[in-house]
Length: 308
Image 1 (cartoon, rainbow, N blue to C red):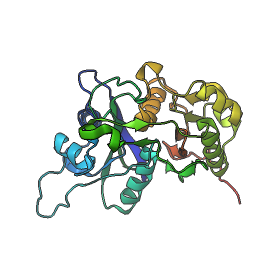
Image 2 (spheres, rainbow, N blue to C red):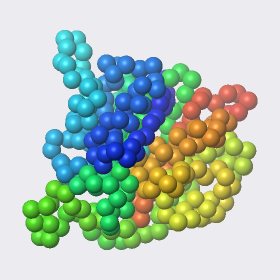
Image 3 (tube, one colour):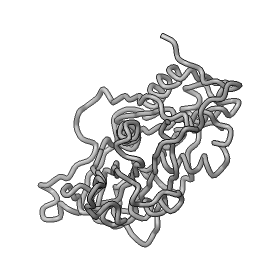
């Protein structure tokens, strides 16, 4: 049995700027698209960074859990749903996948629901100077005998300053600290960071340009930086058609971006022939990627193994 993506969903409804609400809507839709009941989900991980009113306690995961009615009752003989936040900037969702997989592999939980997304702490949409679009996304993970599962997570971080890329300037905010946020771009080129982790992943998976050319591999590249997909394809020497992003009208969904790219690839049929899907997340401060095998490799199409 290996970890599989059962369903996915996003929400960027214009009637609200609340991350809590948008993430809850994405989570509900994600579960509705599956044949899994809420009472079967044993874990919820929130990877979103920017949230309503800059709330830090209780965990945002717990607030979303309550909104969707997930595992709220303590019943004899049934373990309560385990929910927590896992924040790692743009790469948080990929770290959440690896974390959830460790619980799924041991049978500690049967299904894990991951949510991500961001919103300005004021819950207003389109705030000047805030680069990320309000939205939520969700992935439902489980185990399947027909799935190949996920590979190892590859990461890298900027070698520049350790100064934060997002903070609340309390001296300037005064009594408005719960509804403001200062954000700066990371110091490095996200293409350089992304290329480094993708190369490491492809080497380990034994994948080269021919796999992408023959549509046996797809790279999900969700960064919204100008020319990111084309520049990344050139750096990796793979066909640009095999590097999948999402509609630019979405804006920059930041932590939810990998789900947007995954759904775009799914809905356009690019995953129909893919034996390997490379999940990528990157910004100017860090990058991470891991391989996902939707199906177990058949004898006629074996998965190549990295050597060394």
